[in-house]
Image (cartoon, rainbow, N blue to C red; front, side):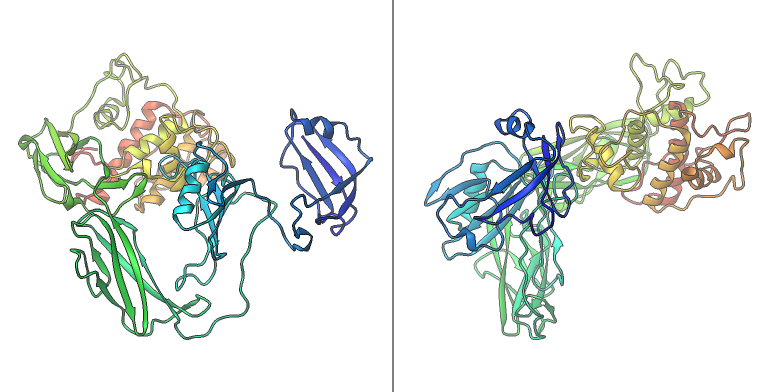
Length: 574
């Protein structure tokens, strides 16, 4: 419930400690929230089922309302220019005050014994990126960072923190990832500024590692910058020199390439430029989890494929390289080197496994060498049998149960987007940033594929909050998605059917016309024997398999045998 009040002028709407505002009730709005606030207005907001909700519901439009602010602490708040409310006091006077274990994003202020303020924003509600922290754990973390008082402002989903990194940024940049993936409209903020600009002389040295975490043996690039007394970027005074603790087995060369040794713990790198000095720290850890860029592999005889490993320390990415892992494979399927590059046997129809091991943990990757085709009961005599069968063997399409494919059935936006994603060998959609659509929950099979498609610009939402994953995809929508995919991959399409027109060209939506022309011209899509395109007709599963098959041929010819190429088909197939 929200009540809109009119104070007559912006000055009359300003709350002050010890002051009173007199306003008039404009509107009482039940079951609403996020009501826009006019320049001379105030909005009272509360849950409709709360005690305050009953009081607000009794207000009558046109009646006067007085709002008075009292300082109940007995302090000197009347002299304050600005004030921000504190939601919870988490830690004070050596005691943890507010308890709480639910993991959420957090916006926190920590105060150190010398009065220094620490502004802290923690992302959350983004599985695989940040889960957030409970109140108690968040307080303990800031106490570990030296704070003697810790207060919680809000949950954090509405917070953005913009800061300048000394020596790099000339203006403040947003550094965190709000839960809604963009800055939310808010009623207050805290802005710290300084007067004038600084001089040209270097006063500070800053060194930033490309990653703060590394596995033993991994490389991290150090970058060093100088700043003036205002922490604005200025040129380095002299060539930078790096020195690692002499009693460690870590190493940093003259170009700032740091190589982690076998010692677990924090490595300290000293950095010098003229009379300026600073240090950088890298945490070396080997208690990691890891994933590979493919969970199964289908490869043509004699071809190579580069398998890459992504490592994490908890939820955090950690610097690694493929040569730090032990690689092996079944001899029948081929060979694999110390960097994870697999060379398939020249024989076809061979199956086996690749094994990746680190610290006693082994990942197994099933491998099929040679093209295989899967027949479904309802595709044996179908015109798209070859396309469907070969894509199914590669896992790009799948049946609908009982060995049926349902080639004439329509497919959804999420299903076609997934087919596009699976056409790329080295794609790990779990690394995509959450798109934030309310109708794409994290537990659904298409969650990561939608995130990938939105992040790369291949698809858009129906609006800011919805994607409609289960809506049937039309033929013109399919053309748009294909064209966006081509743009994202940088592939130049051939023009095998340039100038083709259809009897229903005027029915193609203006927003899809260019994409349809480009995809039809390339030969990936075509019309019907009657001469029409049917732009608003629902695409069938067989049509989708056909266009993906033709797309893969183009991608295969473009990328040849380079590591990380999209899923290719055997040479000579068309």
